[in-house]
Image 1 (spheres, protein in one colour):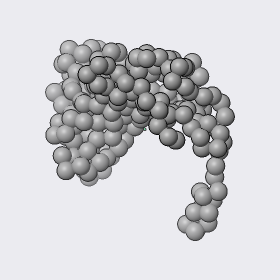
Image 2 (cartoon, rainbow, N blue to C red):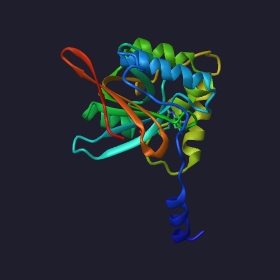
Image 3 (tube, helix red, strand yellow):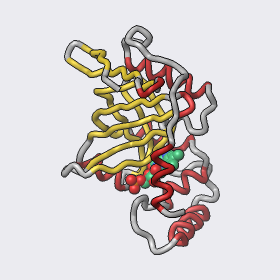
Length: 219
Ligand SMILES: Cc1cc2nc3c(=O)[nH]c(=O)nc-3n(C[C@H](O)[C@H](O)[C@H](O)COP(=O)(O)O)c2cc1C
């Protein structure tokens, strides 16, 4: 299809959001409780990947990059995901420990934006999660120099097979020194509920010295 044709098709696509609304009195005064409520509803709705979130990071110069990761832990301390510390995202977060997270749940006409500081989870926490994964995923983490250029798929396939042979008598693998969790400690939340005619609801929480301050933004 010619790009000029798809351009017109894209411009004509629109959907009206009619499922729900969100007001200052609907939401929990605690944004963590509000996120738990929406997360539970996303889980109950049997969405294909309810825990998939876009993680945005940036270099110290402010050049951004984004990719999807899976939420693996959530409590009053923040939101946890796991990755390779030497990956592009890992390197960016080590040098610039600020990140944004985004959940988009189209079936619920909802978006959640979270921003905050990033810290590594403890090695004990990473180890416990690493060893709870299927052995194949543990081998995969060891085998992949994530984000590095490789000459072909066989590089990681071969590394995987070597590791599988090396650890064939082990039920679990040790934690790779280059792999583990990051926690995003939120200082900002925004809950977006789609509404008809682009008059969407946006309820935000900003962390101040007095605690969380609730505001509404224009859609
Ligand atoms: C649905 C989905 C879930 C993913 N979950 C993770 C994850 O939890 N951790 C991870 O490191 N990469 C995950 N990825 C792969 C990342 O999007 C990305 O390709 C990889 O982490 C390398 O990113 P980077 O080079 O920017 O560091 C996932 C991708 C998708 C599409």
